[in-house]
Structures are given as structure tokens and as C-alpha cells.
Length: 238
Image 1 (cartoon, rainbow, N blue to C red):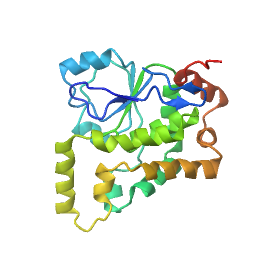
Image 2: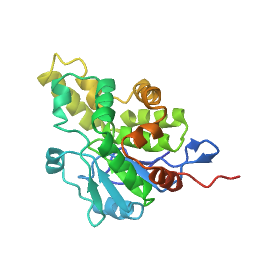
Image 3: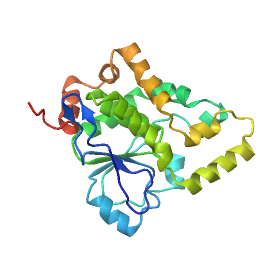
């Protein structure tokens, strides 16, 4: 994957290049990032040269608080969480539990996002910081076409190091002041540990046979899965 430096966008990268069996993930097709509220005019030009569709996974309150500055490009809103993000903090849920909740409760909406990626246009997937909802969605899309598991997990784990330092410090300070008894709040807001994603994907394999099997059970058709492979995979060199 390639980290991209575009003014006003944090945690932005192209996931192309990772191995997938005898092939590789195409570059320039699937991007991931945090929210686009801070996109500068220069960043808008640079991002517009790469991206043709945006999938915004945030809920209404998040969009209202930080509306996107990226305009003129089709945006599909797919709020993945039913209810507010804050509910996970209130319940002091850990990351592993939140991700299991996501794949169990949001399967149809995850499939909706995968369907857009399968259309093959250069697509940017984002939520607020590009860690959890974005991380799960991108990991599922990559895993469904056979991307190397270690590479998928490494892409997820990279996120914590890409989050804006000032924002992370402010969030940690807020949580420690206002939720001092919450054991998992800082991890929820700032961490992307590789074992958590590895455990999630292994659990999907165990329960559904594979990530592709999980997506098909949730409504993705064989034709849509083939389209996803065509969109994301470089041609087989053989």
C-alpha cells in the first residue's frame, strides 16, 4: 500500500500493490482515509485527480459536525453503525467486540459498500478517522478477492501511526477526564492492533468458511464477487 500526502486529509492511502495469490491488488482503484472536512483547495485538486467515487461510512451526527469539503464527486452514504458511535464508548466495548458487532449487525450495509467497490471506479472509503469502519470494510473487500492475510492485517495496523497526533492527544485527554473508569475507551479511539483484525478475519473464516462466503451469505451475488475480483485484481500473469 502507498501512503498519500494530500493536504487536509489524514490516514490516506492506496491499498494497491499487496499480493493476492498469483496476482496483486490493483493500484489506483481502492483508497482509504479519514474524513474530508479539512481538505484544502490544493488537496481537492490532487484528490480529484485520483478518486471518482466516495463511500462515507459516518452517521448523520458525524457528517453534520464535520461536513466533507470534497464536492463534485459522487458520494454514497452508508452509515455502518445503527445508533451513535458514542454508544460503544458508553458500553465500554473493546475493539474486538465492536468489530464482531459490526460484522454481525451491519452485514447488508457492508455488502452495499463492497458492491460500489466492485463497480471498478477509483473509490475512496472513509469514516471519521479511517480506522474501524473503514478498516473493516477495506479488509473485507481485500480478503474476499484473496489478498494476502498478513498484508491485509498490516494495512489495518498501519492506521494508528497515521492518525493526526494533536487530535489523538485531545481525544485521549477528553476520555481520561470524562470517562476515567472506561477501560477500553482509549483503545477504541486510537488503536489498531494487528491481532484484533487477524482475530476478526479468522473468526469470519471459522463461521462462514471465508470472507467471500460471509459476504455471499449477506447478499453479495456470484456475479458481484467476480466483478469485485475484476475490479481489484491485476490480470493473472499466467
